[in-house]
Structures are given as structure tokens and as C-alpha cells.
Length: 281
Image (cartoon, rainbow, N blue to C red):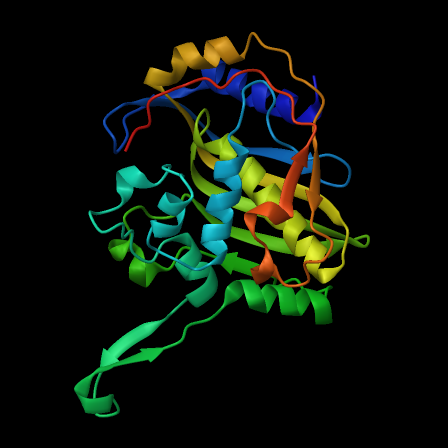
């Protein structure tokens, strides 16, 4: 069993054996444990689960969508990705979710005396991703390389408050590491995506700043399995994983905003079939 699947399967078993029964917002019900950690070495292989197939196309397009700073799912729909459909309104709007906060924290649209002919005035927000990339290039020893999606003043405007809400980059021993904090963790459906997404983000940032990738560390707070996922979890726990694949990024990309889908390739990904499960909204 490769190290990524082993950690994930151990966490599945942990929750199934030690989880506490909890009611939840969706009404489905969960069993959950508090505060768990997994660590993934990005220096040689890419940590995508092989005990069930993870739809890497969705992982890539969702991350590219985040990096575009958008709160409308039009880009995802154009590329055949439906993972956000349940939360979007009829026009595809989600509000100022993840990417909006990453790339334009604090953007304001106001009306006032400075507005041209009484129209709106748009104040650009803070591009947290650009700031982190610039700092990594100029001051890689910084301990302030933090990106947050938890904008308290805008939570009520979001279709879904961020589950994976803050991540921190840190350069140690000449390698770029990333640590993610996730407040709410749908272990069967969501966490496999989160592992691959933030591992990919770390590798992309590593690529453009010229610092080799080190570790991605995942911290989960409320780590849960929904009650209607028990059979699927039991099926996955019977499986044995395959060797991990290799991530290949287009060597010609120099800017984080220049990445497109075809610039990101997963080589040698072999897995068991996907396991379908209902999503709780």
C-alpha cells in the first residue's frame, strides 16, 4: 500500500471505529472525530488516492477556477465540471467563495460622489496568491505566507462558507511546504479532492517560484463520515492501493496565472474504480 492511501485508509478506519455520532446541518447525520493530521511528500510522487479513482480533471479545473478568482460556476460548466452545481443559484452565482477571497479579498463596490455619473465605484481587493508568490521569490524565509478564505464580513454572502479555509506556505531546508486547515471534512467524498487540490497548488507555486516541493500537510478539525456513506467506506477498506503517479507541469510556465488545463499532466495514474456516494448539501 502506498503511503498516501495508507494514511487515508487508516483515517477512514479511525472514524468508523472511534467516531462520535453527531447531527449536522444537512440532516444526514455523521460520525466524527476531532483534529486529525495527514502528511504527504510531494518531492517524488503525487498523492492522489488509488483505492478509488479520483476525477483529476475536476480537481484541476476547480483549482484553476479558484485561481481565476471567480464566484460564478460558468467556467466549471464550460469544462463539464458539476461539483458545485448544488450550491449555485440559477445564474450560477455562489457569492464571494474561495477564489474570490484568494485573489480579491476586500473588494468593494460603492456609490458616492466619486462615482462617474452616479455609477458604482469598484475598489480592488488584496490578491493573496500574488502576494505569497512575490514573497516566496523575495523573502522565502518569511513566516507570514498565509492565505485565508475565512472573510468574516462576507460569510453571510457565500453559498457555502469555506471548509478548507486557510493555508500557509513555509520554506524549510530549501523546500516549499504547505499546511492546510480544514474546519469541516467530508472524509469520503471531499477530502480526497482536497488532498489532490492542495498538493497540486503547492507544486504549481513551487514551479513558478523555483523552490522544490517538500510536504503538504492536511489538518482536519471535524473529520466525519456521513451515515449514508458507510457501505461505500466499507467497500474501499477492502482494497489495496497501487503505486502513486507522477505530476508533470509545463516547464514553460513562469506565472501562476498562465497555467491552463493542458499544462498539468498526471503520469501513470492507476486506480481501483470510483465509488459513487450521495452528496449532502
